Image (cartoon, rainbow over all chains, first blue to last red; front, side):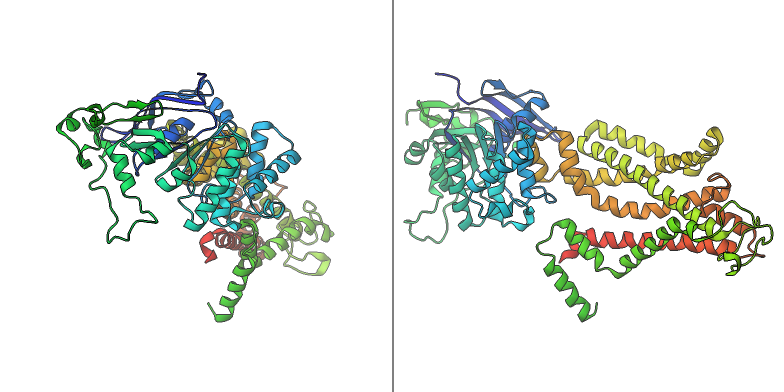
Length: 325
Length: 299
């Protein structure tokens, strides 16, 4: 098999803190095949966003990043800034969570879209404008000619997020990373924006990494899902497999917490008891999920389970799987 | 605030709804009467500086030996009187206005240019480079301004250019500090991160995304800097370190007037009044800009 679009191997991110360091991401490995979409789910602090920032080379200077990220054959970890500048926006781009703050306030959206084209392609102003209007149309902004000369504050949240998506896709990158692209929007707008996003991504043949904590969004958008916990991948499978036959107790617990249309109204929503471990105190010796796990054994507390390939498209890290359950 | 004023304000805010941030600020600025009075006053003084020498039949260097140190009079067109050497004060004040305004504007411009660049780079790059750059600013800050200027003047001789340079060299420090502080907060904004994620180089981010967003406080500060610079120049000229005869500035005129305060007070009062009026005008404009550029005033 030829090399996948993105190959991440043993990616770790440490933040130097006053006392010791925070182990935000610990040995994450995965492949992403061209044209596929991957959802990364996990609760706050599970390292999903930091994984993405590490891939993009956007970590702050206080972060220490090790491992390997190969993208279209190029190693990105430790690559010089100029190389990354040329690559970001052109071959891979990022959609931010909050459309209210991710556009520069004092410039028209048209100017901001054109800037990307001009920086990367050195295109003429007219060409850049044409491309900007085209992508605005594609993300379904009504009346793009008029909207082109407006400022971000004249747009609603949903419309701004469309602009942010347009900015990420205007150069037709081969990979788009979206960090909770719809979390900041109204629920009614979320579905609409997500549908547009998906349509544009598919139209361009772009691969997608979607970071979210909303399993429903993943189910509707992604080909495969990776579940992260305490900076590690705990389960990774095709979306249908993961939802039909989750293997890791954490995944199962997550799925159990999901409200469904057909579920009876209950007094309390199910939750997972306890809290994730504090990664500033170093990684726990055993399985990070063990203290909250309903089926944990003494083994789980002392030794950390490795990722096991269950089938070709299904990996999980749990001792119970090795015991043959 | 009265009810009418509130209504006016509401109407303004409403009509500003579809404006760019710049246009909205301009609208707020125009609604500010004090600031507009400052603009009008400054326009008059500028007009006087430009057209004054042409209006009078006299020129600034010619001595009228018949009429030495006379009080303001319409006779012979000595509208502001003459000085101890019989030179027409009206023309001299206008010439002084040219020089003082020029020094104020040019020096401020230079200070803003250096300060913004220096501060934005230090703030954006951060880390050790930022530390060194700002320590350098601290060191320069610690040197006494007038002491430095006096040394410069003694070494290089008296020269107007030197005055520009000396004042500019000191005033950019404050701007650099302001801009660095603002940059530190702006660079945390997500749109800067977004620009990075789309492949913008650091220099592009600094000039396109950071500097325009920190310019507000700088504009306000620089309108207040212009009168400071004029004042410093006046002080230097007063001490005899600034402008050379026969050229003149407000500071020099005031200095000469001060020595004749008993016999002919107009020699002091008239240039001092112009200087004070300019100070007021710039301060009013600065206040107005500060209010107009403060987005919190929107609500």
